[in-house]
Every structure is written in structure tokens, then in C-alpha cells.
Length: 239
Ligand SMILES: [Zn+2]
Image (tube, rainbow, N blue to C red):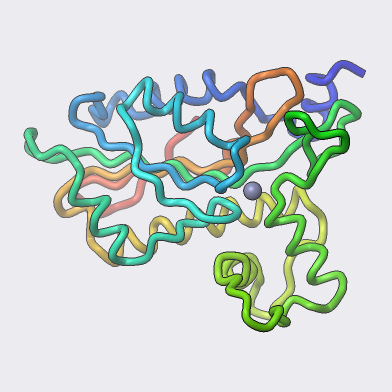
């Protein structure tokens, strides 16, 4: 089956990343997010496969601030968020902050989701490696154990964010990635609201899942978009 048919079967709402960014710009048009007044920030996984998004965002809104750690979860802490907010243009009455939060997932040529063929490697490897590793840890009952002497704080924090109140999480890669995207969105807004960013700037947050499609552009499955202006009310956006 052609690779795009395999993609559509698993992710019917996914679109090429260029199309997605065009739609983001269209959704923000009424809010006047022009490139010269807008500062972009991107929370994506450390995996090299994710980095195309940085380049495409930079082409539209200048080079973005890097927020992300493993799984696309913001990992910069309060100090990092303060630094990010302090870089927003202040030459207009209110600056504009545009945040993207995107975990990712790979697909191989057979349509198997959760792995990617990488450059000069014979066998596909997990994508997202962090999310697949969490699934493995929980399946083996080892989620709470850390190898002595090793620091694994980003993976441990990611696990906490995708668990519900009872400590359980989806045990399937697509559903767990979707849960991660919602956790990323909640964490971005929690930090922005704690710092009351909307008092000085309009803030827009776009979240979704980056999908790496073999020999095709990355695709985005949008999972949430909203904007908050001077009234302090979060308005949902359609992408
Ligand atoms: Zn990853």
C-alpha cells in the first residue's frame, strides 16, 4: 500500500507540516501575529528527526527559542521560561509569543508506527525513543527503578506527566503519544499562566504530533490550538 495511504489509515487528520504552518498563520491572522512582532518558541523532542520543524518555523517567524526535552515536554524550568518571555519583541504595544509543542512518532515503509529507518542504519529504531522506552519500562514493571548512579530525570518527568491520577497510562504508542501532546499543551499553559505572560503579550499555543513519514515531508496531527490576549481568556483556534 502507498505510504500516504498507510498514513491516512492511522492518522486521518494529519497534514504536511508546510500546510499545517500555513493554517497556523491563517488562524492567527485576526490576532495580528506578524513576523516582526512575533517571537516563536518550540518544544520538540531531542531526536534529530524532529529538527525540520525548527527550520520551517524559522523561515516564517525567525529562529525560535528551544523549550523541549525528551518526548517534546518543556524541560527548561521557570528560569528558562522567564528568559524566553524576556526575548519577545517590545517595539509594538504588545508583543506576540507563538509556542509550538509537539511530541513525535515514526512510521516505517510497512506502516508500522513507533519506529523509523535512520541514516546508515540497517534496522529501524524506536520513534519516539523516549515514549517507546516508557512503554517498555511499564510493561516490565520497572518504571520506578533507576539504574544506580545514572540521572534519567527527563524520562522520569515525562512518565509522571502522562500518568493519570491512578498512575496508569495508555499502553499503545499512538494513544500514548496523543496523551503526551495533551500533557505538553497543559504544561506550556501552566507555565505561561503562572508567569502571567498575557499581561504583556498575546500568547498562542499550537500542539500536535509530528509524524515522520518515509520519503515524504513530516506531517502534523493537530491536537490543540488556542490564543490568549489582554482579556486573559483562552480562545480555541481551528487549524
Ligand atoms: Zn523522541
